[in-house]
Image (cartoon, rainbow, N blue to C red):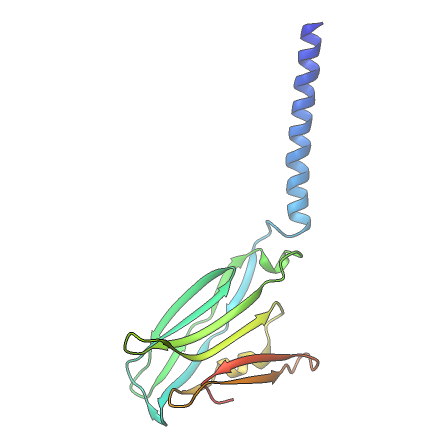
Length: 172
């Protein structure tokens, strides 16, 4: 009788364990918690850095994109103030996660004389497919640090009911 109870208890524990692990994985797969996929965090970015219309050479420019984690890159402007960042693709489960309504924060800036960051581009973008609207702006930034950054509402060409709000010192 004791052996019979022990077998039943063991069977119940094994059954519960199997059910727990299979349903947990199924739940995670169903709601996208574990499916990692390629996500284009940043398209290639290029531009020119100016100060009162004159090119700024040899300036370190930082690109910080936050999408759950922060991804930081840096580059240096050439003699004509030109700079570029390559495309950045990450593996993530965030876009497939129906409970995650996070956004992508784009921040491109320089540091000047160990003081406050000088914003070239700042935007908080809701989850969406890649936007041709933003891609076009990011492929040809002309940023003049002598001008105060302004806030712009950029109409989304692919979705006329929405705008991208961008805080930038770059020409819009």
